[in-house]
Image (cartoon, rainbow, N blue to C red; front, side, top):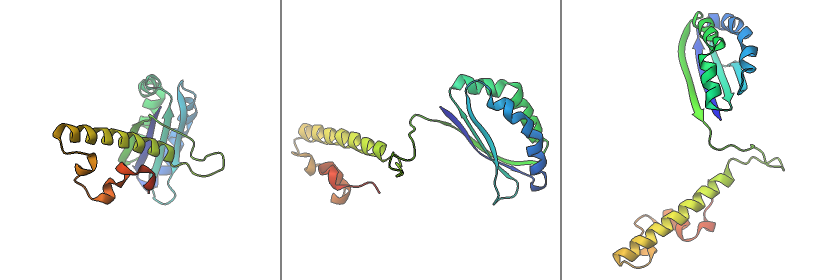
Length: 163
């Protein structure tokens, strides 16, 4: 999945006319193959700012969108209305999950962070053990150079928490 998200800063006096000029292009863009979301939203706190959000299923669909007539017409429409700054980025999404669990609590990717920490723990433990054995220094605890608080998750992962 690919996200396109960011801001377009326009001359505040021309923002509404820019949106009106582009509005007729929204629906044809939304029905393109692979387009999951296509939204422009006005920032009510910053005059002239528009938020852009696009979600596309796969790269060929996004490439077709960028090469297609609706995208070119949108660039022409918005370009006539005093663009001051563009801050729109492309994101490639490798992992996603629902924000809330079945009980309504925010997930905050904790499960993913715990998995990452566990993999890191296994990897560093193995690295320290192999290094200690090769150098003849003994158990890994004698090889760790950092403060004990930083290394505590190496010897007792259940004692640490994700802040």
